[in-house]
Image (cartoon, rainbow over all chains, first blue to last red; front, side, top):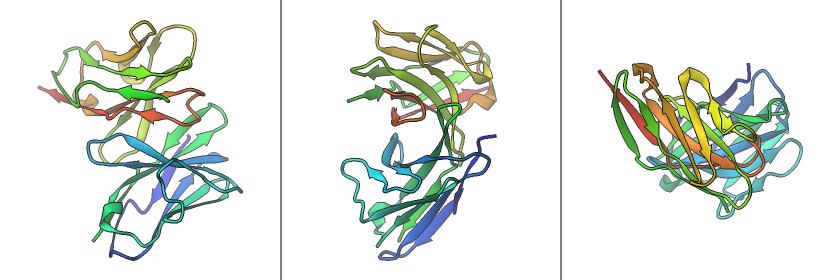
Length: 115
Length: 114
């Protein structure tokens, strides 16, 4: 149980385009989902906390207008990278919080490459 | 603010040897501590966690970690490495439990050699 999926697993796009990444909790409901960014040889950096039915809470330094987060249902959160640029290329990982246990379950990640 | 330091970005051990991955943390409140493992192209999987109580925590796949408050450490060990243990390992800290904001270390890549 407690499986989280992400789609797509890899995406390559041109500079200036927008990319949407989906995060789904497959067998549990998640009122809270988290979005992380992982740079090569770096730790995961929390970008934002997404709560179902309300606005996401962004970490300091994360542009909310660039990284749009929507959590429209208890099983789906989306991250849209708007007007992507090469510096946005990274590995994006989501997690979903289960009520019991109080734990985050992580998705497999999405590799974004902006040309 | 919380932080995690993982000493050694790469650790190499022989199969059957002891695995020791180091983690030191900084927290202004009693911490919740976690170890996660990440296999290539996969998400993070929880190995073990410390919340309260017993300071020696046992996890999956034969791993364990000991919370040492005086040393602000939470090192991960396994008595005998297996080839399947080769992966990236992340230590993380939270001030309010695993379901809330986690601060991660930079990770340690474990290589297991024959």
